[in-house]
Image (cartoon, rainbow over all chains, first blue to last red; front, side):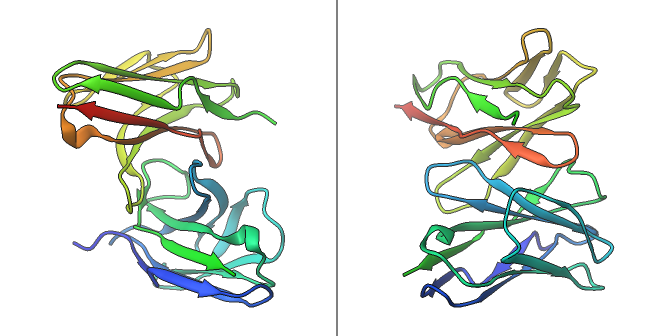
Length: 113
Length: 109
């Protein structure tokens, strides 16, 4: 049984560019949450998707958007990248639309130059 | 805004000793708390959780204690092993999940 998978593993972009990160949840999970983890910090909640809709959102600007597909996989899009967007982006899946016991993927390391 | 925080950023223990990692939270409405372990280059890994209607919960070598009076959460690791070396995060959940800054646990052989 595959756990949460994320792609790509690493990504380098320049300021102003756009990026799309992808996540496949653990088998059987229907809820996907995205987090941003800056170096030396705890993960910060970006948003959560359930039934293809954004259920909750953290304190992130509209440059951060997402999508959930019918197969429960999800994408995180970031537009107009800033240097401060450099971080590890984590995807977590869970069984229902509550945070509950979340299973995290290995993350995508985004570097903005 | 209210947030979850940790008392100490680093903790160093001798192999075989017990470890205690502390966490303070400020949102009294939070009803679910989780401890995660994050090893270098990996995502956080669930260790143990506790709901607000409980004071203590035990797992394999780990115990979580919740003191709602002082809004304090702790993780106890028994007989700490080198493989326990990692960053430990507490997180609180009401509608979303909020993480603390983390404590780095180093186990000395």
